[in-house]
Length: 118
Image 1 (cartoon, rainbow, N blue to C red):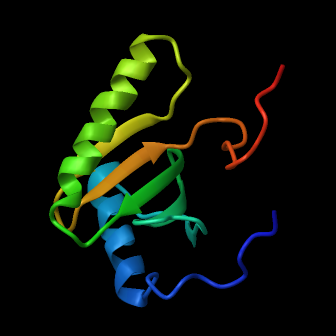
Image 2 (spheres, rainbow, N blue to C red):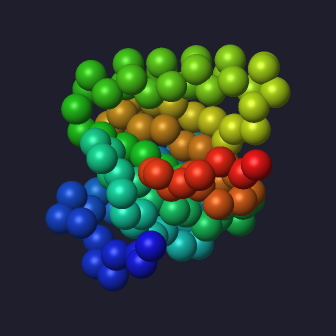
Image 3 (cartoon, rainbow, N blue to C red):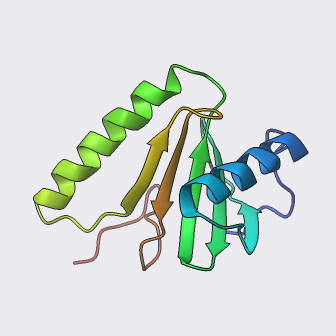
């Protein structure tokens, strides 16, 4: 599937500034590179290269989204306990806006409609 060449409208300069702020606060240094990721249905999603590794930052300006991120954090922890390979969540927070920072997991993300390996 081809990648989008342009960031969606929700990825404004202000949104990029928020991602930079979150990365600096949560990872302790500025990002080397930030790229918008296509396909976020309700969140702005960014791929981040940092001196400590590769990350994904998801954010949403709606305050209620924090509860959804916290539920996802809980579900991901249960999946990890069951032996499912999942991304490590570094941070779920509300400031400056609701966000989730994940360490990028190796491999390719599942695509909608993709067949499971047999």
